[in-house]
Image (tube, rainbow, N blue to C red; front, side, top):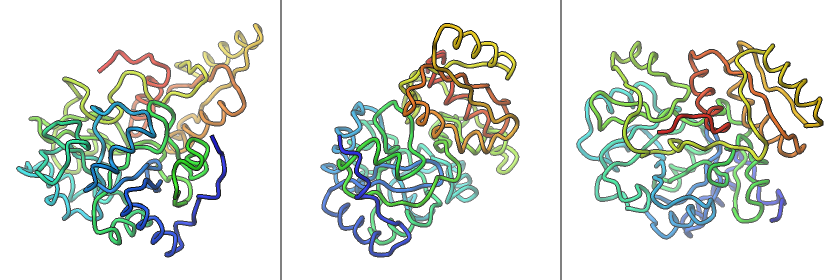
Length: 318
């Protein structure tokens, strides 16, 4: 695979956005920046283009994609029978790192939903992708721009390292400001359920909107709900404290293993921002074992712990 970065274009350049729009209208795939991670985008109204995402990522076709829209008002263009909770959450948090699972309408093709009667929709806040969506005059589907199950990209360079020239345009919008994927809330259940943790927490939703959100139950039906996900090539082990991590590090080094610790202490935002870059960098340096100190289970720390559990395959399942 080529690791050329010649297909990385400056997303702040209006001509680069036009190039990406032309590619999408030609049913090609482009990589786009969002506030969470970089996405691999296809035009939502083209089943042919959507199918290409599954092929290039190696993603199971029954695993649904997230549809991205330019503005909150576009929610009704792709969904039907919207519950009050969906309206309230969209009004409060969009554009931003929140995905809503709602009933789909006939405009949504089966390729996006894995044949389900629901669709996951979000309105990203990154200005480059917002401008792209406006010029495209269509929605896009955009799972993370990496091989399925592997570590998500938080920079244009990460996308180029994963796909080389397989993605014709990579819009560079800088490093993602958050660094972990969006919160997913299923609004078709009563009460709504969080299917994937993110920067917006259940506690925050209850405080801001007065909506009680339950934990996920039932089948895997959204991105990131599989037991093994976000996984680097190296082994990921979890430690409850820095002291425990240092003891484990010494033991590994004593038997000749290349190991290192990931720990950002109480700085949860920095932990989220740097986690995927740290895991990718460890793989590039052929580290055998990464020992991640689990952050506090508060705020975005909940999402970080979820990603670490899945990366280490210590999750109990979905």
